[in-house]
Length: 118
Length: 112
Image 1: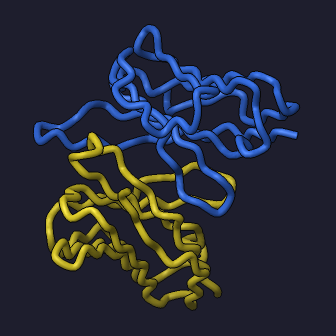
Image 2: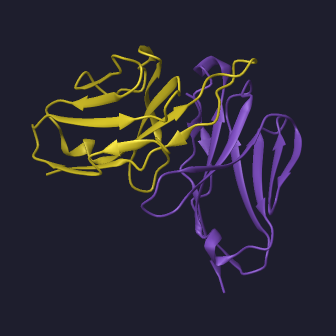
């Protein structure tokens, strides 16, 4: 596709409900990142995939958060038993690869999913 | 804990002026530095990346990096009202798989 897409764009959940957020990266992009952005804050790293391998999940705030990318393209971020503090914009970003020096290629962000937990 | 610090602002400048946005970081081994622009309700958009000490210019934008002082800045010349946005500084370090750590952003307002 032309860019990173995310769905749904908006999600309202009752506390305790499970939610699933989807990310479609740019076709051919190897790396995929999930971030959480609270109001007035910068994006906070959650997890990172290279193809289907989840190489870093150190940013996931609790075991209620789970991410997968089973075929190395589309990724899903699942939040179980949502809490009010989970309310935020969830951003997905993808990048083509790493350069020869190991530094990440440019990240392209999707429009985000705004999650509101009541 | 890697930290990236930015003044949240808002920074208000008149149209046509130079806007100067600043960022400091805590991890001395950081090697990659990025400036993103984020309009309200939109996703971040990369506008500059810099990896070496000194200045890097792209159109009206200049990124400046001083690794000794752990300081990176973004200058916007001939500021336009359309530049009004939040500017996010992000810093990547090898110890963190180069995954950038973001600052909280500086809000820039360019008034006519």
